[in-house]
Length: 109
Image (cartoon, rainbow, N blue to C red; front, side):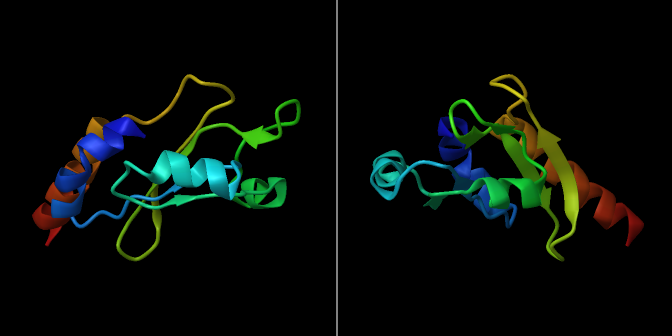
């Protein structure tokens, strides 16, 4: 999440909204969110993770990284799932992806 904090102004300039979600409690999420410029949601349930198609880890009661980039119309432009700590989308890659999508949209207009 720190990378998204570092790239937040660039993401905002692209019209992006950043949102994080976790199975953590409200107290833990507030602590995590204290230095983040974007909302950190808490208390994600297995049912909610299943709706997203996320990999749920029974042993620890949490879901593994699930990253989405949505278009302005709410359509999923990119979805990345992980079954462990490897596979998280880096903020700089999200910026590049959004820039590429915008460039392609301008070229087709």
